[in-house]
Structure formats: structure tokens, C-alpha cells
Figure (spheres, rainbow, N blue to C red):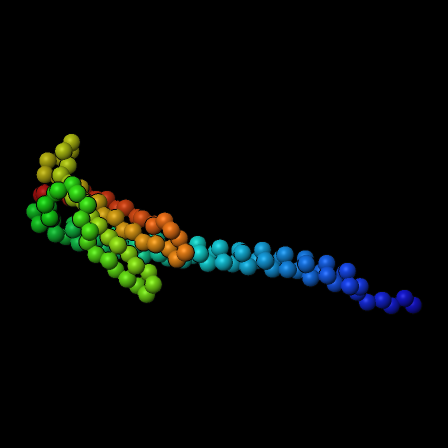
Length: 129
């Protein structure tokens, strides 16, 4: 009976194949973690923007700040390592219904390890009654 174990070359090939498979799996894991973090951050930014727009809607047309058409920095909100900067722009609508203001709200943040900032822009119109 011929009983032989694995040779050194077979063992090395098995280790190389295993390390290639594990490297691909780890890359998938880290990439999916970054995408999940981006999704959570985008959802948080959308919620912050929606809350701000709802606040302006509750104020009503007459109580809105003056329509300057310029961006105005609102606040910077921090949740742990996640910092969000917000700004708003209120403009008077010219080619639309009379006494209507356009409120645009921008939420900006940086993802960990990313140079470029991410932004979410929300827009609504508020008219006098």
C-alpha cells in the first residue's frame, strides 16, 4: 500500500489558494462596512434636513427669515465622530405663485478616510395663506 501525505508543494499551493480566498472575503467585508456606514450617515443627514424643513414649514411664510438668496450657515451637529454642517438659503419665488418662498437646506459631512465631503440638499416651497 502506498501511503503518502501531502508534499510541501501541495501544502504551499493550498495555503496560497486559501489566503487568496480570505483576502477577497475580507475586502468584501470592509467594503460592505463602509457602504453601511455611508447609508446610516446619509439617513441621519436626511433626517436632520427634514426636521429643519419641517421647522420652517411650521413657522409659516410670514415668520420666515428674510429671503436674501444667500447661503446662511445654521449649525454644526456632532454625533460621536460624525459631524454634520448645515446651511440654508431662502429666496423669493419670482416666476411662480405670488408670496412664495423657496427654502433650500444643505447638510454636509465627511466620511472617515474620505477627502471629499458628502452633501444632501432638500428643497421646499412655502406660500402665504
